[in-house]
Every structure is written in C-alpha cells, then in structure tokens.
Length: 184
Picture (cartoon, rainbow, N blue to C red):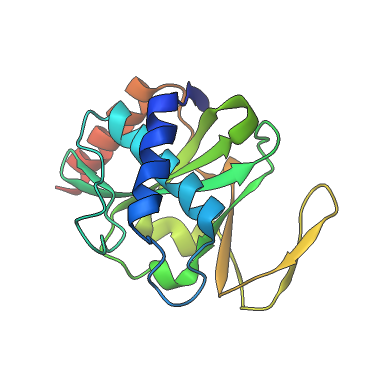
C-alpha cells in the first residue's frame, strides 16, 4: 500500500463535477453524493498519477473504464474511510459491475480528514470471484468497529491482503505493464 496526498484542486474539481452531473445512473446502489464524491476524488487522483485526462462528466456512462494504461482498461474503486487503512479492511465491489469490460481494478481508500488516498492494491477482473466473498443484497455486514450495514445490492468484499500489493506509483505501473505483457 502507498498513500498520495489529495490536492485541494482535485477536491474542488470533483465537487464541481457533481454540481453538474449525477454519476450514479445504474438505478441500483448508485451511491449518495458523498459516495460519488469519494469515487470521483479517487478516480481523478489516479488519473493524475497516470498522467491521463480527468473525466469531465460529458463522456456519459463509462462502463467501468476509468482509464487505459499499457493496453489495459482500468476501473478505480474507492471507499471512504475515517481511519488509516489496515490490511484486514475489505473493499466493497457492487456485483452489478463485474460484467463491465474492464481488465483490472485498482482499489483505493480515501481518508477525507487527512485528504489522503491509499492505493490498497489491484486485482485482475478474472480473479475477482476467486479472491472475494459474495454477499446477496440485504445481507447484514459488520465492520471491524462493530457497526453494521445491510448491502444495497449484491456485493463482493475483497480484503486488502488478497490484493496484489504495491509500494509506489512506479511499482504499480511496472506491475500493470508486466501483467499486460504476459497476456499478449
């Protein structure tokens, strides 16, 4: 895992996008304003790290393709946190998204108070169901702090320790490039 400070510029940009666009258009588990903001902040931070254009909201539905790198279609999944990330934390993945034409998921956690994005790791689409646990809609899930919630849709949970670990932006890019080379 590694952390990136999120700039006020990215936060302001993401906030502005949400004033003009609703990014929750699946019809199920679309995410409230704060969840959408967290996702956009994560996506824009990763897009900046990869030196690709930021989303504008004009593109319409992206089918889970947040950016392309080294010939791979990448979906950035970001969860909001109120603490630093632990290796036993899980990343939630809405099952409706598993059939989108994406090659790789990069899982991140955004700690709003610290303005930090932790890149927890990545996973190929074809390993999702092997590494994650599935929970049907309405399942009661418990967090490590003993709070709970009911799933809004069918859900996969992927523990951080089951993700492919990364130490830096350079390490992440190198691993993705090597993975793409191995499938060609």
